[in-house]
Amino acid sequence: MRRPTPLPPPPVDDGGGGRRDRPERPSVAESEVDGARAPVEQSPFAVVIPLDAASTVPPSGPAAGSAEDGPSVAPAPVRPRDVWRAARARRRALRAEVRRFTVRQRRRRAVWLGAGGAVLLLALATLGVAYSPLFAVEQVRVLGAEQLDATRVEAALGDQVGTPLPLVDADAVHDVLAEFPLIETYAIEARPPHELVVRVVERTAVGVFESSSGFTLVDAAGVVLSTTAEAGPGTPILRIDGGAQGDAFEAAGRVIRSLPAGIAAQVTEVEASTADDVTLVLGETGTRVVWGSAEDSGLKAVVLEAAMTARPPADVRVYDVSSPASVVFS
Image (tube, rainbow, N blue to C red):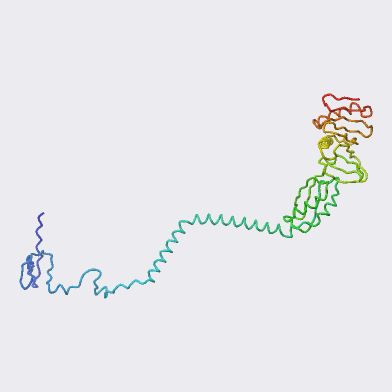
């Protein structure tokens, strides 16, 4: 590509009001190289710097100082303390960024921790109050006792008074209640702030065995409830082979427990030599009821009650309900 011809220089004032043309800059400059002058082709815009003066020209650039910028200063050496400060500042910046991006997570965690702490404090406070003297036993009540003297049982459990309700000794209560044979089962109930309730289920006596030492009251399981010199009212005398052991006694107990209250109150004796020949004796008239085995005792009781209504015991010597489908009178 051809370079365009440079424009001529503007005219120069010669001081007398006239104008003269600026002398053309030579296109060839002379330079001294090893004492010889050699023509050098030069651009109109080039500046020729002699070799002997090049060393006196200050270097250009930001590293060179100038009159306006002041004298050049050498950079200070890097100290370990500066490195440590920079690392610490970097760590702080990273922590700040992490906190900024995890603020919601930290808030949720704080809410859950606060709720858990509140529940824990509430539980600890509840336990502390429950196990304190504020909830100590001041009264013992026995419920469900009919044949049993409830006052005696309450007095026997008096050692639990003053004990916090959660610390009531169940084993100690069991040992005390085991001394009362009439109690079959029991349950302990704490009623804050100061009441301990013992619900008892009494054993059901089925009759008494007569012996030389008196009359021994037993329940359907053969547990001895008491021994007295005379038989109590409403308890039939048991005349069973083998005593309170064996199948005959078990069958007799099941029969007695199935009787309606109106018929059970009239029974004065129960006889059985085996489990299949249970016989009842009605005391006022001496009427005998042949029951047979304990099977279908519920149905036999209903049939006997209907038969006694149709024909009262005063007019009947024997009721045979061993086969409930066909009752025999004699």
